[in-house]
Amino acid sequence: MTKQRVVAIVCAIACMAANAADGLVGQVRQWRLGHEPVVVQQLADFTAIPSVAADASGLDSMAHRLQAELAQRGFKARLLQASPDAPAVVYGELDTPGASRTVVFYAHYDGQPVNRAEWQADPFAPVLHSTPDPKSPPVDWAKLRPPFNPEWRLFGRAVSDDKSSIVAFLQAFDALKALGHAPSVNIKVFWEGEEERGSPHLADLLRQNHSLLAANLWLIGDGPMHQSRQRTLYFGARGSLDLKATVYGPLRPLHSGHYGNWVPNPAYQAAELVMDLRAPDGSIRIPGFDRDVRPLTAAEQGAIKALPPVESSLKREFGIAQSEGSDGLTASTMRPALNVVGLQAGGPARAIPATAEASLDFRLVPDQTPERVREQVEKRLQDLGWTVLHAEPDAATRGSKSRLVRLDWNHGYPGYRGDMSSPVSRAVLATAERAAAGPVAVLPMMGGSVPIYLFTETLDVPAIVLPIANHDNNQHAADENARLQNLWDGIETYAGMLGDLHW
Image (cartoon, rainbow, N blue to C red; front, top):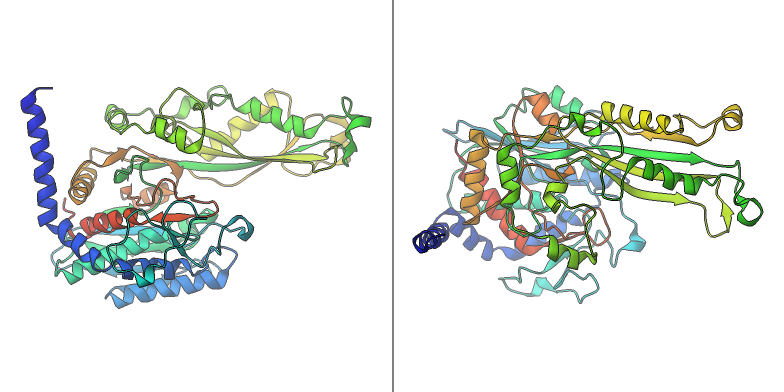
């Protein structure tokens, strides 16, 4: 690269940063600096509401709280329900005079179940810590004046997945209003209450409210940012399909000394089943499994190559010596995956167990379908000598068939990967870059799963994922946390999408 080229790039970055400081992003940042205690308090208040599937009253309280938050800001807000016993979707809309585009901002307010014994503190009594370690001394932030340390983290269930995105949206809206900056788009809000349960009512709600949800774009506020900590856009997400495989052995547990080497051991067979389906490098041992996979385009491959390298630092962070395959992290998450998320058999007694369970999850990519994957898996196991069942085996089956496995599937959903070169995609990327005052990590697809296909297929509208959570947030695990700098960045990015998005 020539010296002149390097100078030009440095000058361009400096100019971009200066423009951001003088423009909307700089104004929003200054507003946030004066309101950090209010922002953190709102996130803490939201996190304190136990909006998890096991607590219907908590979900209801959260929905009504969010409806009130929107109404206070001038939105036409109401709750949408597919059935009386289903958690409500919080819906709001606000028209902008002169705006020609409508954007729906999606997030979910429900969180994963909790096992209190695994947490360092009550998951619904948010605590601020100065480090990622939940055992570090808590910060009494109520007595401190801003600016807060951006590396501080607030701990609690759903604090980052997804309540941070909801708070970032609300605070960005407040910042624009305080600054007298009108939105650039008509705004609709769709905050779901059962995403962590697989969104069982989402398809019906979208169909029932097709006209109400008419828009030009959905922005999905879910998922973690890139591990480099750069602000991030995903143009899709992998699909999901869960499987519980129950392998049957003897009718009751048997002494391993008296019957080992003679009675088939279902724990060992469950391990065999996993190895029948998955190789050590993560590849899937099903002939033709990749036949339906849509290849990456040249632009998508280029976006992956442009990402900052993070593999070495992640190996140190996770305490691992090597990765499963030879691909980089992002490239590996563009492929289908079969993950072993649980193996269970036996107990403390030295006995051959009666059954063993393998919990598997498949991550699907375009153009795979759950139905086709299920068909391929079952045929593969049958070809390898497994007796595939979908109910408890009876005595006749036990006495005549070997390698018995019961497969219980969830419905699952396909993956989605949008067009990164479309006008709306280019506009969202440009807006994100202005808000970041620099480059944005662009990924063709998120490794995790969100049912984006429902929005794109049911409503015939593009969808782009706008994540703000820190990658090390313990999402779906104990001691979930939100890094403050991610929240600050999220407010600026949402302010850009609300007030500076044009196409």
